[in-house]
Length: 114
Image (cartoon, rainbow, N blue to C red; front, side, top):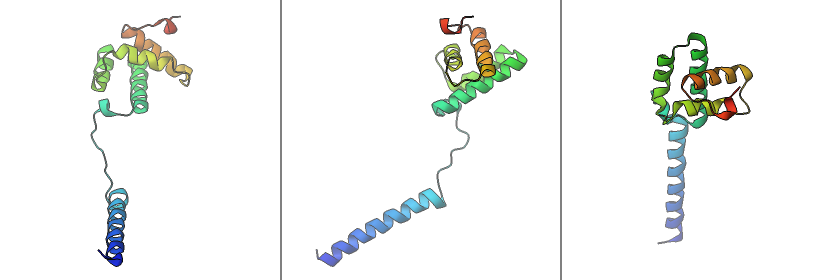
């Protein structure tokens, strides 16, 4: 293969790679819709759990809170909520809501005891 052919091949590969990345990143990027909560990143799962605890703090509807936690596919929803309550960056009002839901779910670890 001649030197010119090699440069043409490498140039074509680089141009194809650049065009392919440009198309997938700019023109038609992947957009996830209707994703189940179980596939969320950990920080979004935490936000989801906090919103459920805030809703529970308002309505005290435990069956509804359990139903809302079910899509996360957690082994122990009470432990999950209790873990959120002891995170250092949790606001005091959110901490109270999380503790209340964790207690209702039957999980009150020593760190949540009054």
